[in-house]
Length: 456
Image (cartoon, rainbow, N blue to C red; front, top):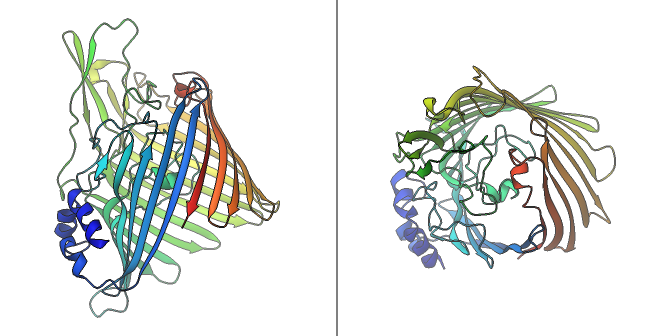
């Protein structure tokens, strides 16, 4: 079995990468290493989505994720694969490896109907009371790192890029793209830690491709020809970072607990995960040249349980936010510093019930009237979730509403734990509002879903 896994790693280009940065040792010799007892588990998730407007299947997707865990040289390792098979194939991608992936992170094989690759592969370890090094815990390899606790939208949870084949409808756990990184945590006193991230992986958001159901068309996010524009639009190859050291990303998070408050201070030096769509007029055509740009994110979070209530807050300041503009004189792009935040209040005053409300805000500094997006943008979310019949049934509804564009998304769902390892569900994703808005652009993409998840 491990010989087969080794072959998969080598084909996907990960072997040389892992050996090169010292994450997992030399993969080519893994079959000769005594890995001791190995634990195996797996999940099989099957979901069927039906387009409510067209009455056609949008996807019929099986996603199987086998996972192995064991010990190697007294360290704990985890390997999780992903096998995806979609009987419909409408969501893409059309290519084997979308340009957003680095060679080390891309699936070994991927197309509209099938995907095979390494989901996560990391080693956990710790070093305490060493003569020369401070105490620390570390995780090395392909992994996810979660910053922030917001539902539906993100403020600080931007360490990992995200897959947008289904807009924001995927669970965050499934939509995040694990990347290769070094993740080290240093304890500071009894109640504080410092997390240090080094991310040499140049992988960014996988966007929905043209012609797929969730292709982004709102002018707030992508260039849109002006009414009556006769020029053709030509998209050039993206200018994508590709240097292991020079294009690395760095993250720091200080966490502490004091007077009942969980507090963090966050810093991330990274590339904006969506390319900047620079535009240039060339005679009878408009050339769009995507380019990834650096950005500093500085922020923090706070949360506190106050009886039946939990108060949550996140704030993030981005030094360079590139947004589409209405005039081509600036390359069709304006750059602004941006302040994003979310304030959330959760109530659990009724047994097995959660009611949560969130207020998201985004504010652009040095605003110019040629920027397509409003200077101050607000979105509200409301979540009600209740468990009943000995917590074997769950009913929930999540609603997101944009104040600026008067559009939104409503997501009802009912799930049932049929057996200890089998869960079934049914739900819907309903969009409304103007097609110029972030949610309203998908107003003809409402869908119903049924599915199950089996663990073994």
